[in-house]
Image 1: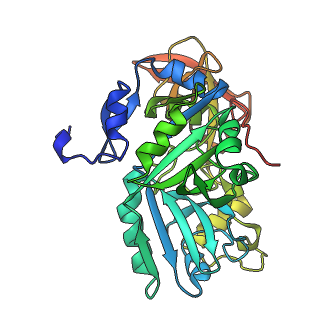
Image 2: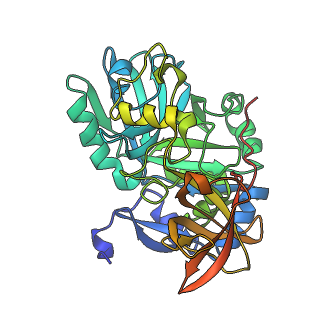
Length: 373
């Protein structure tokens, strides 16, 4: 385990300590995995009220220059030229072999300016990737900024009061706005399956903004543990676990993220790294697929557990697993051959040498509540 002194701290670190956050190393940072009430209560609080997440460890990057949309399209299978200003899209950085080197959110700030939010563990390699492929364009890492996610049923009540213009946004839109005089960039997005907002703010102003939000009875800090259980219930991938360099977007169950114009027969067919493999998977199907599972019993099935068929043959692996507090049951995601991916398929997971019954289930396992207008 790395020395704590060698780990970064976000601008909200002192507030996490004051709130009895249990700090753990994560992607080079000391981050709160949970607070005093524990993961279960934090998870349920976010579902019923409003949870505040520190996601400042994520990479915030601005890419700009004339024609940058077309240049970025060589790295991801989305139609950025069609993206409106202050609209965002989910995307993947693909590889020549058809795999995924990271997933990200891309927002168009201006005609030739895009705001990217990438995963914490991948951000430095992502920046190098951008710089190597975007010669002549500016790639600027906003390492000095904090990032808060306000998520849950009552998040919109706060934003309606504090930044009314941001409350008019629908899912995957953003705007520049001031909250109590603090300049922010706010998007209606998140990683919980709930309606919510992500707020980019300067590190200097971040702690004061967090205190303002936490002053509402409906808001409390939520740690990485509940963030993980919320995204698992919502059927959302975690990079490095549910998808990686060896999985294509089609195998990962995120083919929907490939713009129609970039598909075979589209106006801008292909033209991105690994297009020949990914478009073949779209046309002819992939050999494996990410699926969701409900698990018999009460004990969770964890990442790395092997999946076997009725004859005991190993056919796949669990990539994410845990207890779903909303469902009050253990749930999981993993990869199986496509012929085993039908909803309702009964399989087994090997846990400490014993078989546990698992059933392929429709994802998301808990309905997403994004505000689409």
